[in-house]
Length: 248
Picture (cartoon, rainbow, N blue to C red):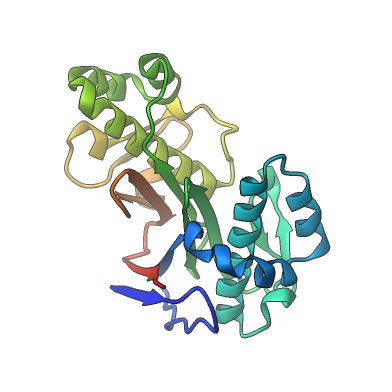
């Protein structure tokens, strides 16, 4: 299912049922006109963090991204955006604080370039990642730090033009999966392998630390816009993903 929403005013969220994940796709560059309103709903810790960014653009994107997160979560929780209790969990993963941590509404956030993605579900921990495809110096060397041995073999068999897309899809998958686990990048991404990257049918996950990963998790990758790869990692019983895109 796909839908749209506007970056100003109230957000009408559809019902979020068990077995479903909502993914909100937002172009942060389209929100620049809402910067002042965004700053008004941040808490003091968020304002302090924004002030620590060296560049104005990074400061602005942080404020807009965080305000959008508050607006989205407030629509699911039925409270004002400024009242959403956000806290930082293990390894820096943002999460809801009391009284909304039980029963939990799970969410995750990622942004790259001017694109931000927000995932929300009631099923359990979730991870999302978006990667803007950009030239990477020494792509072969970086791939050796990220891809499993079999993934590297597939990567090396591709022509130069296709290697970049393969790498960014792989990176998005691994980042989303590790974020769902709550590990961030505390574990080496080479320890995780995705059958879809090897041309296998289905969405097999091979994790050296979890032989049952494919039974526990579902990882889905797609291109939300040309030049980007995104991936969502959610509990295996999450059967459907609804996409919503911001419009002016």
